[in-house]
Image: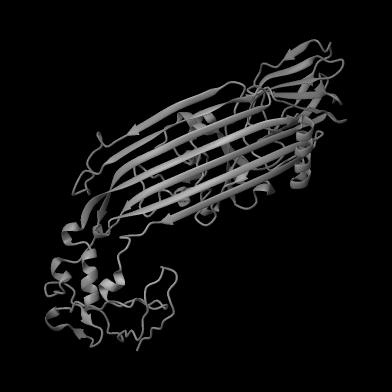
Length: 517
């Protein structure tokens, strides 16, 4: 059975992947360097081994004739690195931390002696990127978990990187679905707009190119770290000027987990000056947990997380609306006097006739008493991830992950009579990666990624037949801009509608005609 799995993994890698020397399109790291003796001479055929401390998974390479070695496809984490060669003592680096998408160099020096002896390097080993000229910075797990985040969105920490900013949401969310759409990820890097940023999760693209940003936003406790690339990136990131690449945690040989709940409400908040009708409420509960561990020790691991956000808050509206007299067509006391576009003169007594259609829609418009009000908005966000890592052989590694973010929002309308609008978005991502190393310098990686994001607008006053109620036939395919004239406006030719048809969707009007005379 094990032999069959090895064969299947190798065939998949050869068919789906593309071999590339030295570097691969992955969130994993690469470690390379030179093995020398104490006099500085290179040592060929030295074995360099990197053991991931959390999983005991072994990665190794043999130095070439010029003493160079390369270990590819190292998952993010801490490693114990050893180097050995006949006639030399074993050199040991007890802890070496590799970061997301890092290409690091570690040179090792061996001393003459028996292979049963060890030389332990206790000083901090500097890792230098000598493989590419990219400019970027890693935000580590300690920062992700320790820094306070209003709303627990990891992308806010992009602001820790020089040249990067984000538009904070503060205590509130925005109506119109802005809170649950990918465009809410308002990050700017080096002065470019947010739509010019790319987003990758475990080496798979999760960018929403139409809106910018991404709707797959993992629980901050599920992230190992992420890296912001802002300039001179390798060609593998060439589809956007900037890239944010994040890595979700993997399971280890020990079970680890946590549960959490964060609570915020308006009990201690000051009254919003513009909230005239009531205090602007804010109640937010965020709860969930993570769990990871072994399925088969040293071979197969899992990690999963879940988070739900429930928020209710008051949205303050301040409208500029007609006076009660103007709603009846009485402009006698108004500063600006409307002019009849058909005659070019003021209406008799400054009384504007109200058409049956306008009279029908008038109750939907807020009155002067309704101009300033506070209405509730509710937000429910469910998101989670499931990730599995497998070591098929020492040269074959498999990763599979599924992520989902399901968002529901109920928005108040700026016109109170129109009530609430239901909005929903759901983003899903599937990622599968199989990596096979051929010797010391060749990595073949087969990656499958699927990112799906949908957004649905709910109907406003569903079931209301506006056309029948207003006795209107609708509007034409051709759009026109109405002209409202006042006593200070120049007289323009009147607008005449010759034919009109029923309303369709906002972007698709049925055929019709409209002309001006």
